[in-house]
Image (cartoon, rainbow, N blue to C red; front, side, top):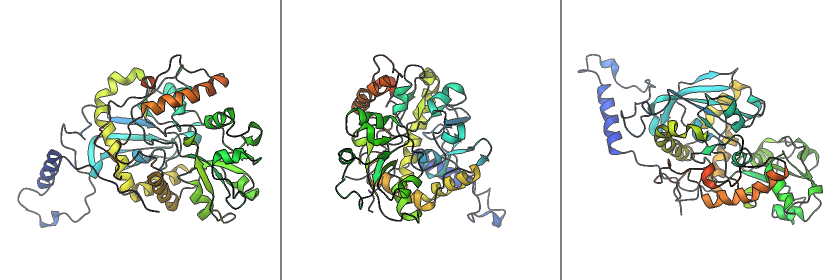
Length: 401
C-alpha cells in the first residue's frame, strides 16, 4: 500500500544555531580527555533553545498530565507517545508513564509528560468525566469527539486540536459471504446481523434507517470471536486502523480479508482530540500556544518514522498487562491506514485543525441521538463551545496532493 509523502517542518535557524552551540559546549574546554569524544553512548536529549518555540519550561506545568481513552496505542494517541523521551518512568500499577517531553528532533522541552491509560485502566470511566473527577489532569483525550457533545451541558470540554480528523470506527463484513455488499447502507438492505460495541453512531444509523433496528445487536465486546464463530455470516464493528490486519494476519481461525466502511461517511465524528476544561483556558493558554504545535509536529513525525513509537507502545502495554494484544504488525498497519484514509488530516491541510462546518454537522446529527437517550446537550451548542483553532500552527501539514 503506497503512503502519502510526509513533509517534515524545517527546524528554525535560531533553534539550529542553539543546537550547534549546545553540541560545541559538550566538546569540553580544549580536549583534555580524548575519551570524551561522542561515541553514540550519550543518550541525553539536546535542550531546546531557551525561550524558543519548543522550550516549554516557563509557560507550562512542570509535568503535563494527559488522560487518554485506552491502553497505549498508535491510532488514538500515537502523537502523544511520540513525545515521550527515552527515560521513561513506568508505573505499572497506576497504568501510567512519565518521561521528558521531547519535541521534533529529540529536543528536551524542559518539562515532563505523563500519559495515563484509560478505558479498562480506569473502569471505563469516560475521559471527560475523569477530567472532572481529577483536577490534576490538564488534557483529556476521549475515544470519540461526540463525547464532548454528549457531556456539553454538565461536563463541558474544549478541544484544542484534533489528533485525527476522522474517527476510524468501521463496520466490517466478509466479502465472500456478502459479495453484493459494498457499504454500510448495503448491509441495511439485508437481514445481516450487525454486532457492535455500544456507540452513538449506531443509534444515528438506525434512527435514519441506514441500518434496521431489528438487525443490530449491541452485545459486542470488541472481540473477533463471535464473527469467526459465525463464519462471517454477521457483520461487526471495529477499527480501520487495526482490525482488518488482525483478522487477516493474526487470527488463524479466520486468516482472510474483510471489507469495511468508515462510519464517518455517515456520522462525521472527528477522532480523538486533546481537550481542556473551558475554565482552565486562560491559565493554560500560554502553554497551549507552544505545546499544540509540538503535538502537531509529533503527529507528522509519527507518520514518517513510526517504529520507535510502536516499540514504546508495545513495551508499555506489556508493562501494564493490557488485556488486548498489540503487535509490531498492527502498529505498522495503523500508520499505513492513517495515511491511506487521510485520517490525520487532508493532504496539505494543517494537522490538528478543526473544520467547524463539520463540527456543526455533527452537532446537528448527534444532538437528537443524545436527546432520545435522555442525555440532553447544552442549549444552543455551537462549534465554538467545543473547539478552538487558535493554538494551531497552520504551517504544519502532511504532504501530498
